[in-house]
Image (tube, rainbow, N blue to C red; front, side, top):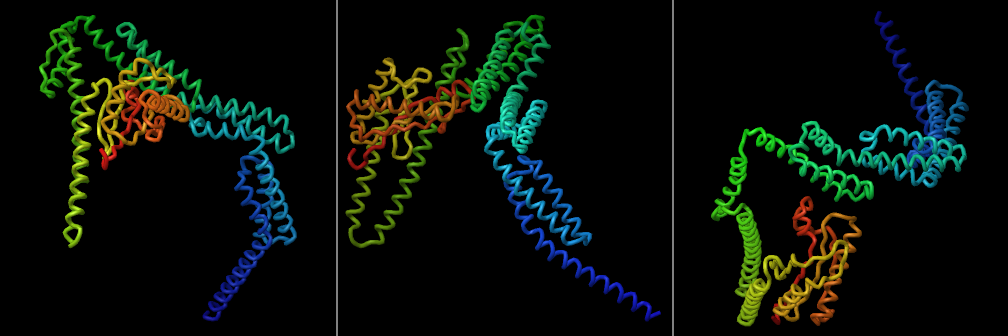
Amino acid sequence: MIAKTGLIKFVILAVAVLAAGTGYAQDELRKTFFKEADAALATADAEKAKLYAPRSYTRGMREYRDAEEALRRGRNIQSVRSNAADATKYFRKAAQAASLTKTALAQAIKSRQDAANALSPSLAPEIWIQAQRKFNSAITLLERGDLRNAKRREFEASGLYRDAELTAIKSQYLSNTRRLLADADRARVGRYAPITLGKAKQLLADAERELNTNRYDTDLPRSLAKQANYEAKHAINLSEVARKVREKKITPEQLILRWEKPLQAIAGAADAVPDMEDGPDRLAEELVAFLEDQTNQLQALRQEKSENEIRVADMEEELRALDERLGGATEERAALILRLEAQARVKQMFAQVEKIFTRSEARVFREGDKIILRLVGLTFDSGASQIRPENFELLAKVEKAIDVFPRSELTIEGHTDSYGGDNSNHILSQERAESVQQYMINAMRIPAHRLIATGYGETRPVSSNETSFGRARNRRIDIVIKPNIETN
């Protein structure tokens, strides 16, 4: 019995050794016969031949798998070598065809990628499938050498991809608003809030028009769609209120008193008298002025805090260094005092400049050692950069402000809102800055070497671009004055 058990173990061990030897042999054979095929496959994959040359790539994969299967089953070595060689040939052919496809069908490939980026497969599936069929047909024709018909299919595929892209973009930005407006129509909102509902529908139409005109500049249509969404919800809410008034569930007087309460609460927080005997307009103006004052004061306090922190740190460092020295301390302390006095003079000059402008003309504030004149009253015609005559009076005040800081360096910064293309906005902001620069050279007689004009386009907003008020604030000219502390 013991002898029989030993015999079984020996047989198992022999089979294992033989299998291991066979596996090792197969690995060596694979390295020999599949080396070129593996390299050709890697090149074909890098060229995306599975997509751009599917016919040759598929034939190559078929030969490649046949070679693997022949090797696994221990078939004739010549059969393995032949299949691997055929696979190499087809993979190389696929790589070349894919490279040609990417050149010959470049427009369709770009349109396809744009449509995919817009999520067209999920948001415009029917058009996407049609485009894919045309695109695959173009690839097949090109692989067969039929360039003429392949280009025709490419043209058709590109058009369908663009349609799918636009449909997907509209779905992303407009679908929700369309559903809201449909709900509003079913609820007969137009009967009670026709003005607001009409505004929502017009905004939606404007957003769709902008997308049709330029689908790649989505800032404006997205903002219009967001406004349309708001107005649709606003109309639904107003219609509910109007319905209650019409059904005499609430009187007009009760409605007005209800809407006055939030203004009264805000007035209380602002320590203002909620005087609305002539309506809410005057109180609203007072509250707006109050909030603007608070914003300006907060900005000034932040600036002063920052300056004080820097000043204290500088003084501590210099005084510490002076205390460690024996010679020159008196002279260096005097220099420090002079510099602090110069900074104090700049602060006095800043206060002098602040008094030159009204709230509607300019905001004046400091950033470090620079003074910023934000010319809120300087406006341009849409898309234009010419200075209008009605701005001459404001620019005369700018000249007075600049005279307070003789020999200062001046930078004119042009800024736009986010509507329009990035490149066109940058160009427009640069042209407006240069227009102001030229005016300062010609009318103010400021030497050109003191002036720099820079356009930032939409890249430095100071407010939200989602509201008309915010966009108006972002369309601006800033004059940055860098005083010469040593000489002022």
